[in-house]
Image (cartoon, rainbow, N blue to C red; front, side, top):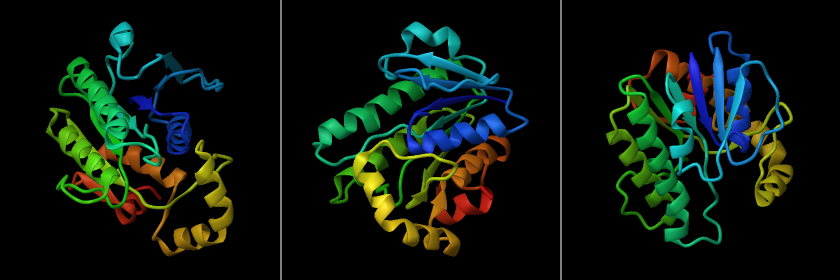
Length: 220
C-alpha cells in the first residue's frame, strides 16, 4: 500500500506516520510538508511545498497512491471564521480535489475532524460549522471511499507532543484524567488513530463518520 500524509509534523500526524512506517503492508509513505521533518526511513519520502494548497509543482509525485491521511489542521483560538476556514476548508478541499483527480477511483481519503463537528453547518460554534462544511464537501468528492474521524481527547504516545503550546500545557495538567479516559474508552491515543486510519484504508467501514468508540474498536 502506498500512502500520502498531510500534516505529518502535528501530534496526530506524527502518530499516523509512526504507524505507517511500522506497518508491513505499507511499502511507501509520502509526507507532504512545509519544511523537512528531520526523520529518515527507507519507506519515507518528503514532499516539501511552501503551501499544501498549491500542489501544481509536485503533481507528478502525487500519483499512484492508495490512501491519503489528512490530520492537517489548526486551532480556532484567536481566529475569525474566515481565517479558520482558509486552512480548515479551503486548503483541505484544494488538496483533496487535486488528489482525487490524480488518483481517479483509487484513493481512500481519511480526514481527522473532531468530536462535536456540526454536519448541519448551522450551529452556533464556529469551528464545528467549518469542520462540518469540510466533511460534507469531502464526502461529495469521487474518492474510492472517504472517512471522517471525530476523536475527542487524544493521548500522545511514544514521545509525541502537540505543537500547540496551549495544548501541551493542558496535557501536562490533565494527564491523569487523560490516561483514565483512555482506559475507560472515552478517549483515544495517537497510536489508535493511526492504526484506525490504516484499517480504514485496508478494509473500509460501514459508515463514513467514526467517533472515539469506533476509532478505538478498529485501531486496537
